Image (cartoon, rainbow, N blue to C red; front, top):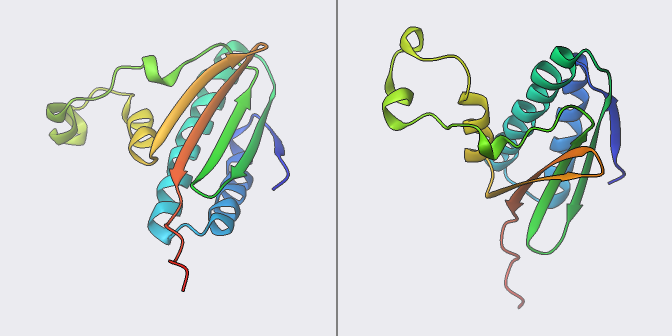
Length: 145
């Protein structure tokens, strides 16, 4: 699929979601894997806007791209917001996850959901851009007959 460039604003999340679901369908992912991937991408894209562009008072785009090979689907999100590696964010522990919502600390659950929704996640900072890469294993090809 051709890359998609959208403004780094919350209304663009819907278009990003459609792109991810189209890539998932092209890769042959089932509904569950597709939904988990969409949720993962949505959480990080939301963070790019809400914690990246908005607080810094900057505007920028989010570029979404996909690659499919025999084994995996990769979705990449790129932005020019402040550097942020989600892997450095503290994850909620088991105790935190089992508490009632009103007793939980704010933040962290979105990044946790993103990591849990994919088979692998990579982050890199390249030429002043954040690049978040989501990797989902494709279903095994049917055996040749």
